Amino acid sequence: MKLVVGLGNPGERYRGTRHNAGFRVVACLAERARIALDQPRFSGRFGEGRAAGEAIGLLLPETWMNRSGEAVAQALDELEIDEPERDLLIVLDDLDLPLGRLRLRPEGSDGGQRGLRDILRQLGSESVPRLRFGVGRPPANVDPVDWVLQPFDEEEEMLLQDAVPRAADAASCFLAEGVAPAMDRFNGPLPERVEVPPEK
Image (cartoon, helix red, strand yellow):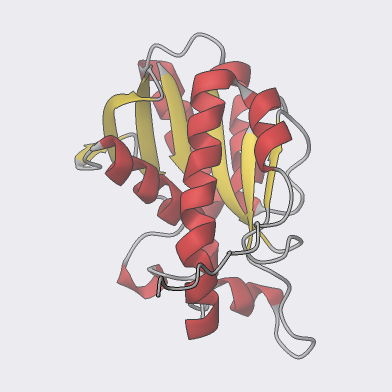
């Protein structure tokens, strides 16, 4: 089995905020694969099924963001995941990437993201594949902590209509082919939308 974990904060207060981009991407992946995230397991909402030809589990931790490692460690203890460095993917928001930009990496530091920091600490390793989803830097007068806890605005939501499914595509590519092909295909800016003129 392979496991994809989307990071965020639980509850209506945080639904649709920048910090919950990981939740949103995994929910999109679940919808495509017809996997219901309705099992209360691993301190979160869990579902399992098949996607990209693989048996997969999808997890949205319902701990607070900075305790995400608890849920991931529980899942790895119970599920048949042979090599977390190959079969685990963490999906998270990233302030240092422009909105919608993706960055897959097989390992590395937490980059200041507290959810990922707790996961690396709990697992005792930085060899944890991650898919970073850009949410952009705040304006100069806005604190980054406040920024990530705010909802996307209307213009940003328009861009997310393409960006979130593309991130789900990247996760599917990771599941089917591994991190290197997914990096080659999806790291970089969101492709520009091509407007097709109506037929006359």
